[in-house]
Length: 282
Image (cartoon, rainbow, N blue to C red; front, side, top):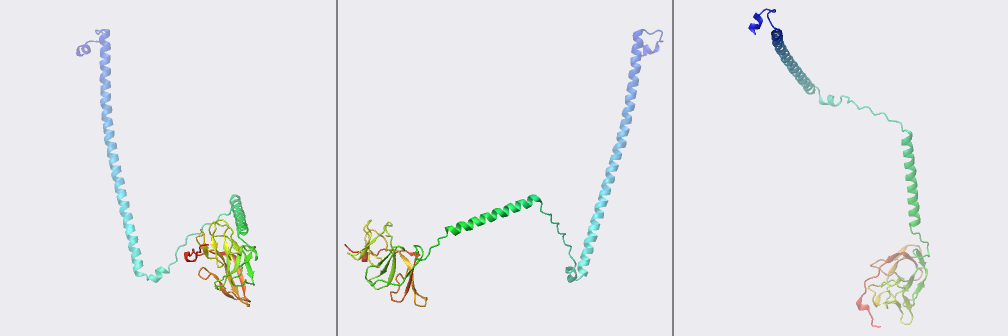
């Protein structure tokens, strides 16, 4: 390289001149790169110092503001404590309280109005339908019809054939035992057949399975497991006051002239369990 440079340009060959030019270009490029690296390092150092100083300044500012906020809150709390301590409690309670403003009520739009109107109409229709259904389904019996009240003013003689009340579906019997009047439901307590009164034996007999009952409705023979069912009877005197009424424990009412008997075929009293001591052979 040195030998090439010491030679004059005239003495150099073409290849030597090319090599010399490349060597000079490479030297310039290396020098420029070195200079650029140095400048970049200096700038990096300067920017790093600037960032560090900026971060330190932000930290200091934040710390100062936090201290200021804490001191302000502490001062406010101290002032509030002093006010509470110095002021009487009655005065504090009488301080006007801020009321939340009421929200403005929005007007009902067309869609909401139609919704409410349809809902009200449907509710009214459903209510009317329910009332009508209950009205027709509720049993209403007139006096003198089965399910209603029958008024009896006469009574058969004690031990005589009971009166057959076809409309009321009951036998109006004056029990031979002397206990009084009883209204016996015409349905057998065994399997629901209609029993009959037999003059020959002077008792009630069921044609289906042979159950037999005496004039007071007690089971005396057959497969029935209980006595005959009966209806509630209320007794009224001449003034209309109720003087006697049948119940599960009091099954017979007073038999007498001048009394009025109200037989309610809508209220039934179940027969008592059969008493084996009353059963007969025939």
